[in-house]
Image 1 (cartoon, rainbow, N blue to C red):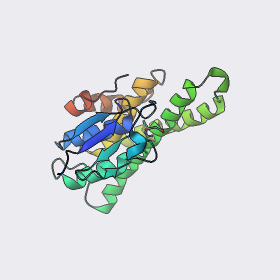
Image 2: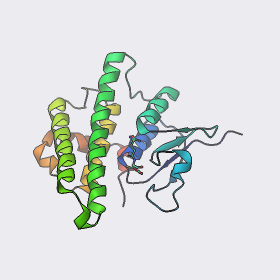
Image 3: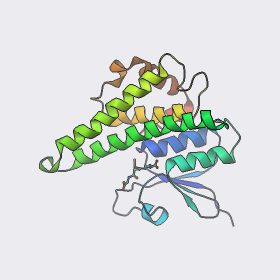
Length: 206
Ligand SMILES: N[C@@H](CCC(=O)N[C@@H](CS)C(=O)NCC(=O)O)C(=O)O
């Protein structure tokens, strides 16, 4: 008997949020199973040997990870609200935006984890190295968007969702990074995205 598809993840992960937004934009039905991979009794490693969220559980119990694979799958199974172009060139351009956004999240998450360690065990050079990636990533996003409405021009797509999740994560975990002031076009883009119910409903909660 096929089971309802599930998304396993935490409510703070930008990668999980990306999947939730894609699923919502495409009206895909699934059950959200909240699981924090850092918790002692987490079940995530039973679904993903890498112990990371998001994990998508298919109707036959098979699992998909990571977020880039999951969103590509969701795009493939639902024709509603296309988020990825079909042709190779524009499709790769969107995936590049996604890699940039995810890379910023990876660097930011590493800083967040490093800062959770006891003060005398933290490595300031490591934090600085990751922070440089976050700042350079923000600059590239801002330069590439210029004065366009959406990342790739006139149409909302996966690139915007990924960038929105990265900006939302920075706003949530790193209020001291003043990207709204340094990159006003990102601030406008983010506010535009936050008008969408899928973004509003998935804002990170501690
Ligand atoms: N590239 C992965 C990154 C996923 C990721 O780093 N998830 C974090 C939460 S934000 C996680 O589960 N970390 C647990 C761990 O590293 O053990 C994706 O896009 O799904």
